[in-house]
Amino acid sequence: MPRHIALLRGINLGSHNRVSMPELRELLTGHGHKDVETLVQSGNIVLTSRLSPRRLERDLQKQIAEGLAVDTPVVVRTRDELADVIARDPMGHVVDNPKLYQVTFFAEEPDPQIADEIAAMDLEPERALLDGRELYTWHPNGIQRSKVDRLRTMKRLPTGTARNWNTVTKLLELADGGG
Image 1 (cartoon, rainbow, N blue to C red):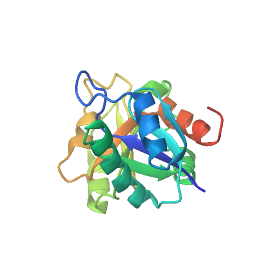
Image 2 (cartoon, helix red, strand yellow):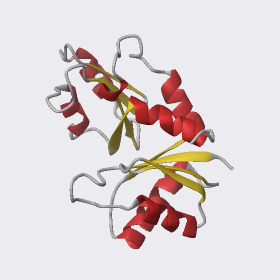
Image 3 (cartoon, rainbow, N blue to C red):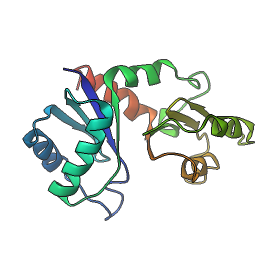
Image 4 (spheres, helix red, strand yellow):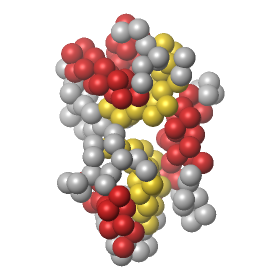
């Protein structure tokens, strides 16, 4: 059965949408998901499932809403899709701090016109590249005051959630059994 990476959006930020990782693992295991593991407190789940990523997104969102009273979007990638995100790394040659390098994972592929708009933006010293269902962003001066960070809230972008590069690579390691 394939390994999947499920990313919950906007949980455990301050006192909003609090989710206990042990309770989350127990809930998902109780719903028949196999080998359920979590990484840090920000809603990173690795599990084994026969479901398609799209079906798994819907099922996990419903299970979490009903079981933990938290209604949060869920974005899923297969293990191979996550490995491809890492292999396509367009900014590895400039990134000197992986905590300031993020990937936003979208549930759907954004309109191709948005990629052109992002490419035309003057964001220096930051960088952004939309590639398929992922937006790679580099924030050399920090994320809090980032111009690039505002891109993720563009009204025309589909539902997405961001993870820093350290988390992205650790999720693949976890999916490969190196937890």
